[in-house]
Image 1: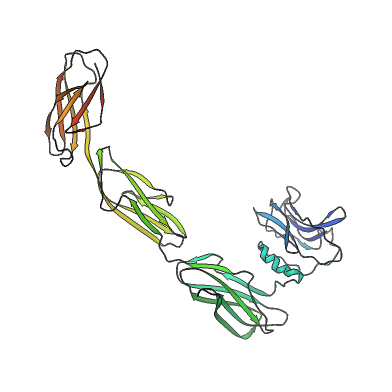
Image 2: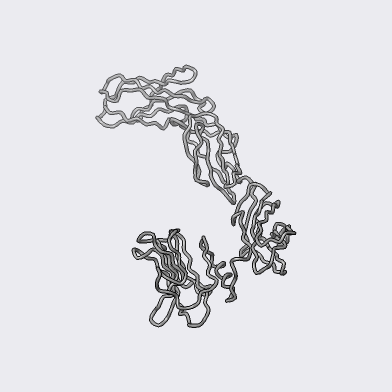
Length: 415
């Protein structure tokens, strides 16, 4: 037996709230999707004859359909075809048939999926509740976060049965306790009224609701409190490494300095983090450290973090990247013959503060040879000319040592 039905415009897309006959019993059922691929949510409780019951069906496109009996969810199913329709809408019938054999009262149609708490309030332990009276919170939405402390709140009150509205009041816990914040009194006999309240809220979260009172002396709130927050605090951001003013020195220089940028960041509404690599801003996942390369030198590293409100935090660190020894090039013949005279040259950039000796040694197959040096003020050439000894053919190791340090660059020589 159909309770309510909306016909399909195609071969799918209708919805139907009905009493499903299971043997000799009737159970509530909600269906969507038409005959092509229907979604079905069926209750488990049988409905007795000559007894009032509160039956509710709800659905959401790409979500779930649900069926309720007397404020309790009885069944659900993944929806295959819920859509808004402009086709025929029927109460107590299904496509001009399957008429409901009973009485339907206080039928309501909502343009959104109701929450369980709202359905239970409509049921009201069997006492019912008229959706044509009450308070609706319009804005801000639940869990709203504001960048400013002055927040505007908006609600609509409706009364029926001959009563008129006398006042609407904003209640919240902005002082730490639930209290009446402000009231609007009405000298005109309204049955529907929207009131706007503006209040200055402290940092952090607050709960609010709107109460309406009528000429019968009845007062009531919206069905659920809402939460808002005022956030003017920048994210907490710090650069852990490298520390500001530090110098990082590589023993042996590579083609460029490797930059390790480690940081920490926290915020209740953290959104985006990024750093500047001296050329462009690079977005990273908040909490993930950054690694990149730069030529040796002094740089100011910047890292940024913002929250969903737009509060921005910036940290910077000035760091110098240096090296002890940099090998620019090696020059020698890769093949030779016994007794041949060969020259070995290495071009370096080095630091007197680290390498106190300006001499170098050529180690050829375990034998040390002196070198001569020449410098242009920036780069130093170390060279050594030797006669290739009479040895068995094989792999020979050549190492250049500088002062009391090794260049760590090995070359294999084949003769």
